[in-house]
Length: 99
Image (tube, rainbow, N blue to C red; front, side, top):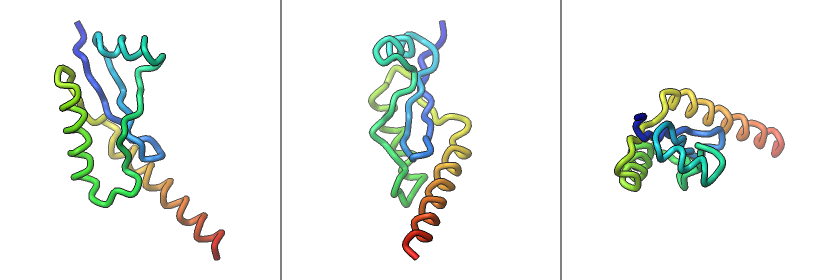
């Protein structure tokens, strides 16, 4: 039997999304929502101390899902860099519009 697992992803908007992988929990989520990826209430938008925030996010999600393995996805760093690049681009565009 495949173990229940949640992989956390950082979207381009900074939103943290939970991807339910394998096990009965993933099947239940897919039946309920039509997808195995659901948004969480967490975002990196406006966060200054990224590592502390990331630790709090994963700790809170683990606490709410005690029977499931919760991890950051292997691509977390690349996803986070992509988020910050989009944020930088938005700031540059806004700066050019204002000036």
